[in-house]
Image (cartoon, rainbow, N blue to C red; front, side, top):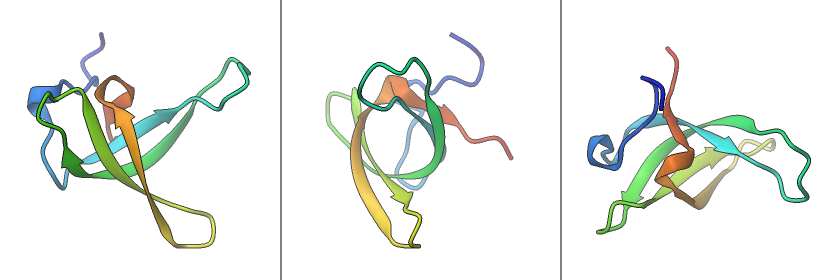
Amino acid sequence: MTKDDVESHQLFVGALVSWLHVPRGGYGYGVHVDAKVVALNLQGNRARIEVAKKDGSTALRDVPVESLYWRKP
C-alpha cells in the first residue's frame, strides 16, 4: 500500500477521491476517474461514488474501497 491508498475507516460521504477503473476484457491497464463518495455500506468494503460522464451528466457506481485513492489537488 502507498500513502495515497484509501482505507475504509478513512472514507466519508462527500470525500473527493480518484477511482481506478479497470475496463473489462483484460487489457492490462487502469484509468483514474475523479469521483465523489455519496454512500458507504455498513461493512466498509464498498462505496457508492458519483462520476462525471462525457456528456456532462453524472452516474452512480458501486465500487470496492480498494479501488479508491485520495484525489491529487
